[in-house]
Structures are given as C-alpha cells and as structure tokens.
Amino acid sequence: MNALEELEQHIQERLGGTVIGLRDLIRALVIAVVSRGHVLVQGAPGLGKTLLGKTLAAALSGRFTRIQGTADLMPSDMTGVHVLDEANRKFVLHPGPIFTDVLLVDEINRAGPKTQSALLQAMEERQVSIDRHTYRLPAGFLVIATQNPHEFEGTFPLPESQLDRFMMRIDVGYPAVEDEARVLDRYGTIAAAGEAASGPATASVTPEHIAAARQCADRVHVSGELTSYVLALAKASREHAQVALGLSTRGALALLRAARVAAGLRGSEFVTPDDVKLVTPWVVAHRLSLTSDAMLEGRGDREIATALLERVPVPR
Image (cartoon, rainbow, N blue to C red; front, side, top):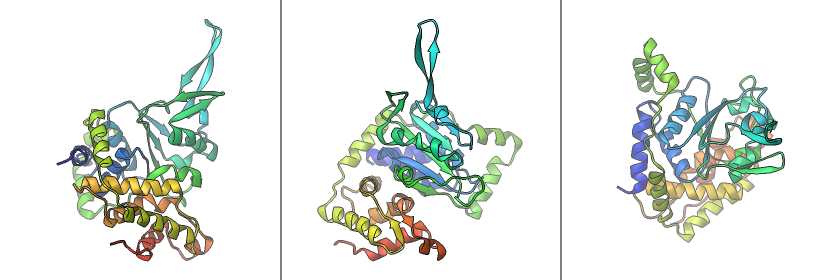
C-alpha cells in the first residue's frame, strides 16, 4: 500500500464513521486535498453537505474556521479590518476567519457577489490584500464551500471566475434507502442530534501524511498520449455547440492532476484514460457555461461533460 492509499484509508475511516453512504464523494475529497485544490459541495438542504465539510476539516491537521453565507455578509467579515491602536497610534489588522488552514464557507451562494469575490485572490494566490497591504495565508490553505442549487430562493449564482478556482464540484444527492436507514438508526435519538451537529474534533491526518501522498502522486507517470487526451477534451468542450464557455487551461491542469492522484489511489504507476474519465464529472462539469439552447432543452453540465468523454477518441 502506497502513501496515497494509506491517506485515503485514514480519511475514509474517519469520514465514513460520521458521514454515511458517501464513499465515492470522500474519494473525490481526498483527490482534491492531495492536489491542493478547493472543493465545492452542492446539494439540497439537509443532505449532510455541512457535516461532510466539517468532518473533513476536523480530520485534517491545522486550524479550522467556518463562515456562514448570508445576504448581508460583507467582504471584511471574511478578511478582517484595520483598527486604530490608540496606545501605539497606528492601525493594526484584526484578521478575519479567512486566516486559517481549512475554511468552510457554508452556503456560499447565499452571500452576495461582492462578498463571493473576496475569496478569489485567497483561493488562487493564498494571500489577501486589505487596505493596500498584502497578507500571506497558510501554505496549505483549503476552502471547502457548500452551496444549494441555483433555483433555490435567496441564492446568487457563483461567477465563472470563482467556479474555475474550485478544483472540484461534488454533487450530493439523496441517499440510498439502506444508507438513509443507517442515518436514522445512528442519529435518531435526542442525544445523537447534538453529536451530529457538533461533529468530531480530533485530527487523524498529519501534514507528513499529506506530504508523502503528494510525493507519491508526483511519481505517477503521465504519457504524452494521455496529455494529448486531456487537451482534446478541453478543445472539445470549447467547440461544443451547447457550451458557451469551455474548459480553461486552469481546468485542464486540474483534470490532469486529479487523474494522476486517482491513478495513485488505485496503486498504479501510470495514468490511464479511465482515470481521466473517473474525475471528469467532478473537475469539468462546473466549469462549463451552457448556452440558452442547452438550458431550454434541460441539459445539465454533468450530462454534457459525460458526452465529451463519448465524443473524444480514447488513446491506445
């Protein structure tokens, strides 16, 4: 078992004890963490999105903070403000919750566009600018954001520039009957309600675990044919008749990195097209801006991302 597989085993055991029936989604989270990517978790209210984010944050070493997205949330509520220190006669920064290792932004699309944009620099450069001063964030800064579907009341759609900064979007649907029965059995008592709300508090994954997993992923070989396959998928997305804005270069890089980690997680020393196909719905779908014709026909971004895989020839 390599370092990547050991890391996934740790996180699967930790999250699987709290979040039931989401094994494939937990694998997607592991891929994002190893790839230094931010994660957007989408689904209807009450399906465990917040619990999933909190449990992952608790499983990772480092400081954890949470921001609740609301219509009146201001950018300074995230980044912090300079306050006059009368004793020293100078302004000092009172840092906001963004100065952390793992940041959970709950219901991000209930915050206004101006507040959402406050995250752009932090997610891309791992630093923030406040009153003409630039402040570094921790090297392992990770954003886990949850959002409700766009048609829900009180939501603001995320701009394309911000969606592109999320390495993955994970869609959480209704659980299988067996899994939902296990949830009711475990959390059906009054005492268990408090346990589910607070979530776990101890870490099981150290920075050394993550560093070893990243070194393992970098040793996975990517052939020239596989790189050409990724580029062909990106080109096909840009030329698709029902896609107004296709996969960016940042998205193509994310797809290649995610496929590399996915290959390492199954113990392989090289990436195959099947690894690319596995991660495409998570990495590509949310980056596709669909045309009005596609929306009128009721086609979704995940459906078109899957269609791209059928359109582009697989290299031998």
